Length: 348
Ligand SMILES: O=C(O)CCC(=O)C(=O)O
Ligand SMILES: [Fe+2]
Image (tube, rainbow, N blue to C red; front, side, top):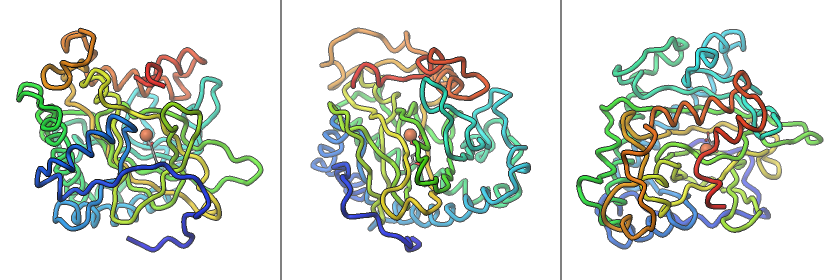
């Protein structure tokens, strides 16, 4: 990992994320699985230390290269980048320019650029969108990166399935197969420094709407809302670790047993505020035709309520509803904001 020119400051409050070790989860270490379960019920965010096993080290190595690819993509001229903005066609993948989304019910604009690359496009099992040459040249790396992320995700899903004692019919891994069409994607984000007198939230508060998110940060800026409080605190990037968070699909699958926590991105803390902030994300979502309802068996049966899997929205419908309400073109005021919300309202 490249050295960061300005260190994360010592004097800001940070979120108490636990650090889990990927190699222990791969070995089905029951204590590590129990820690995963606790962290996922309490906060829905944790660090995953990827060092010390080939599955993790290879993911870290690919992430390092992709940070540079992301930088190069954002350095393309804005007119060129805008040719990859397909939002007007209701598409989720491609480029999103600065300020193209709203960050609250009042319609305040975001302060970042995003580039989303679909798993299915890279694996050639879904729609192929035009991409800049810089991305097309890196299809091999992207395919490796997606496959490496999926391997880590399968370990996490199997750990959840075991620790929650779910029957094989409720397996999480088989609802997130690499080869099945889904909305899984890689995301590059760039947020430039903001003038000190007008700093605002760069990426508005939200819960992720998929299943699990694997996030690499180099500098601060990500904040989580501590459960049961009004306090936003920074998540400090840790070398060798990914930040993992649970999305709303996991809340729905587990009838609220697991948590998807609100988070947002603000100006990086201290002197890091003067740096350009990049982040690299892999969003894992359920396969398109999976219904987003509670699964049966194990600990989920101990949760009250009776909504059946068959009643749920499909993962594909859910994705569409959640993202369109936040695009400037589709935003019609606070109703659109509310309509694009996920499970967070029920569990503040
Ligand atoms: O950039 C980050 O650290 C977080 C990004 C994020 O939360 C998202 O894209 O959903
Ligand atoms: Fe997020």
